[in-house]
Image (cartoon, rainbow, N blue to C red; front, side):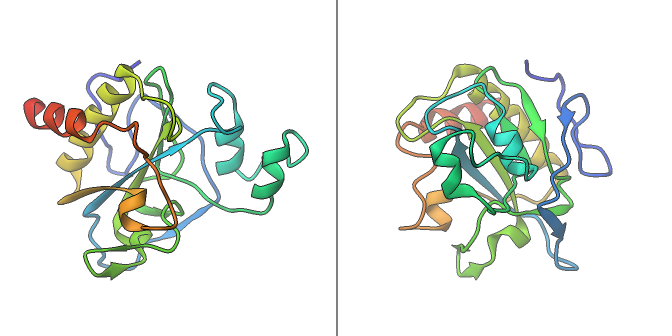
Length: 186
């Protein structure tokens, strides 16, 4: 499922991936460099994979009556730039030049409002389920493309920028595997 090669065009979109526009984005502050990549996990309903819940959440079409958990998300307006499914498929929701609403209240290296200067990547998963080899391969290829297009100097988990409030990408995300494969690929 990994698009080969992954390239970001001048509009901040990936070539050859499905783009579903999210209304939950806006302009970044003028002159704000994109230098942080934030890795998340998400599954809707929780711990269930393959459905359209995440797409519906990011496009404000999630039916609060479709699952009891969805009632807790009613009215929530969030998005991410990218969503990587368990099979490695990438869906893009927000062009990289725009600010996606993925980080919420956040701080990284003394800077608040991480949405201003970051790109958010959601992995289909949970804190309790290991991620797939295809997800790691896609994430590595996507990370390389993002680093080639933007001055990304840091990569963090949502839990790193929202400590005490968020736990993702969770204990099942293998940072050592990701960083070693990313290093070997460069």
